Image 1: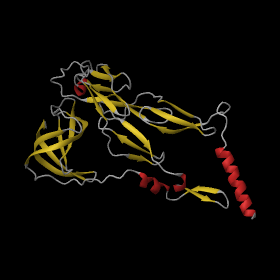
Image 2: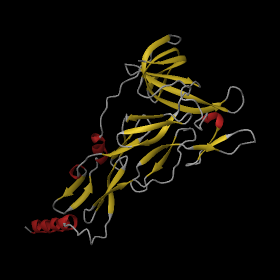
Image 3: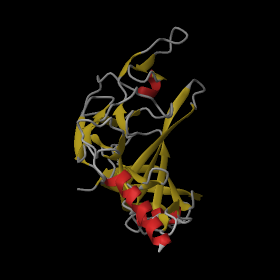
Image 4: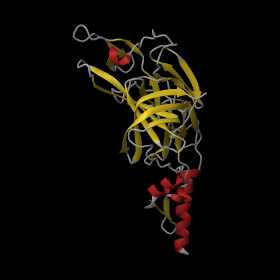
Length: 317
């Protein structure tokens, strides 16, 4: 009986501390972030339950890699949400009197003109090979702008596979256009907390990480296989996935050149890559007719990839 009375007193004290509301007008407020999306975040007071939703407070732009010529990033100082934004190129200082550079006026990234191309928007849209960066986006769509000619495209998001952040119980998604969103992992306190009703003792369960992992969306991964034999000429329909860029020493012996790896998948989920300095007009998610010669079969990150050379790409009507 005494144990029951003690338990009731403990539970009553806990309920008093947690659930008795404080007048919002008199509350000192202790806000914590309870949710956020691409546009705004929501904070809830731990004392009175007052809820405040406001636009993100973006910090200073920064770049993650000097190889990324399209975008830099900003973080919300309140909730940590990441925003993608296209570089704003202006004329930079000359190096050794003859090497011209471009400078991002927002994040201070400095690159050679030979890598940026006509970053000032002077290229003709009709003849431009287009290298898009994110100009703006909301919860539903994004607008991309070409850094060469200024052409803009607006399209609905196409979110990739989620990446979990177990420390914050959230999952992040990256759009094919480069945008980023983060969503909470829905989980109840009973699933992660151990409660001793005799002593009122609370503690985390040992399998919290496994429980959160079980809440993540499950997608069946398609296994990529090699396509054709070395030397075979392929003529197939594919979907363009994304482009990766890097610098290498120029074959001319002077300076560097920008190389792109174009990644495609066929209807069976097989991965085909093309490593080239050419700039075909391709857009993520669209279908193309790909002609090329099988140069190599190799594995990357556990996926079998078919490397092609001397390719031609034509959009499928």
